[in-house]
Image (cartoon, rainbow, N blue to C red; front, side, top):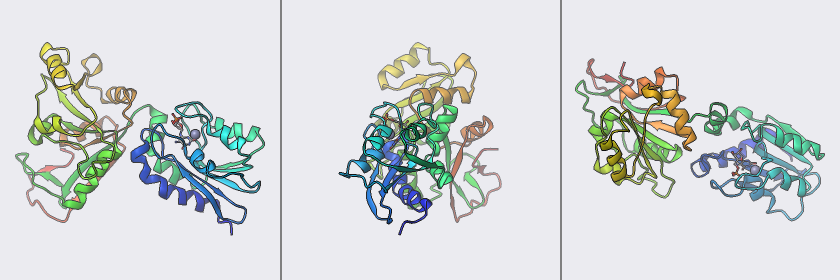
Length: 332
Ligand code: AOF
Ligand code: ZN
């Protein structure tokens, strides 16, 4: 029996969601061909950035598409040449007669043009099925398409009384193993992982995914501020794919020497003004689709004040720090 269309789209989303780690900065997408009687004839996913799209992985499995079969896709099929040819061409060539789409691909190259092309070729199309779920799974991609800015998350660990560190800034492990594994997973999910200067100097964080090392690794970002950046052993020995310092004094010869010696990229704010929005626009232009900020409190507060934060991952431990003077997670 054929189920309601939302059923097939949600089934696809469940499998597509974990693949985001491998497809970023591309969206994660699933496609499924279902017979008139409700039998799943073929299924396919966009498995990896640069590789073929979900529709190809689905339709190439089928010799002959039955005329009454329905193709379900979580995202509007592309109609442009990117790293791969247009999926709309394949759908038309394979003789699919009906396509059900989770949500429109709002990136400028597609944005309804894929649907239009299918319709112009006599294909019956419905779009906007389980749409909010489809948009949530690709929330990074949709923010990128709309604002040309990375999706930005703040990640923090707090005690049940909302504290992050003792008044003198020292912190102990607040959360346990589960939170640590999850954090390392996030380090592959996000395109970059960032810390402020104090956290960089105090913790020498590696910021890579060491629990799941076969997953793609992020870029490391340090909001350094003024002066010449200092070298830190663990940070530079990590598995990060590249390292960027946001440094006011990037032009100083010593800063240039630091960049040459370490291979790090130095970026400074435009016209010396610490405008975080402009900076994030630039990071997006450099190919960073998403950033997870891992502290400290001052950096969280600046990002929130600049209206750049999209979400907060809070790991809250069932413990009390029990010190009123202790530092709140957002530092205010
Ligand atoms: C689809 N199916 O599975 C995905 C789509 O450079 P390319 O060729 O990989 O194209 C990337 C763009 O294609 C991406 O920005 C988005 O608009 C769309 N992604 N489209 O039909 C898929 N992953
Ligand atoms: Zn495509």
